[in-house]
Length: 200
Image (cartoon, rainbow, N blue to C red; front, side):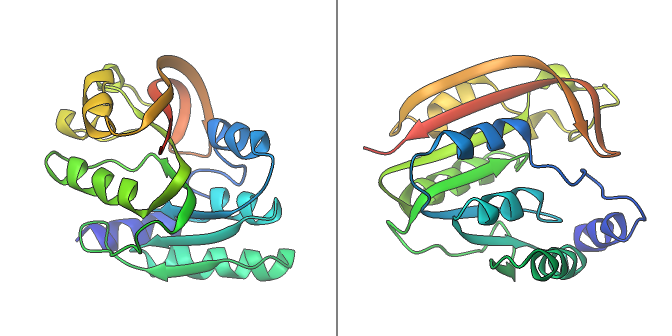
């Protein structure tokens, strides 16, 4: 089971993806004039949710790993931070419509058509004027040791993202070669897609 895989990974001594937030996500949060309510699906050990909470955001996060949730809430308590973190599955989770000022999709990989359906649910969950910030692996990442799915249909291209998020005002959409230094499992040169899209 995938849940067992992720629980086992998060039980390892070192943090799977490091303690620092994803750099692109951090830049997005730092650029926002006013914090709001943000949703972080598949937030793992909480590196992005904890960063947003520290910046004054109201954070809703979920994952299907109980181990990840326990670690995140323990770190939040140690830092005096508050966030809502629950256990759920990306394929069945339900969101309130027009509820979030931002949604962070940081390495949330899905096969089609589940990917498109999930992305459309995220768009529905955004308030007007809300933004989606996304970073995920491109097909050029296949075979590299710096992380990512082994199945090509779980990877992201300009076309796939443009189609999935065509109802948003795409403010940036780039394919980049970046140096990942995100713990043991995202380490080294990587081929990624980065996107920020805003709901009208």
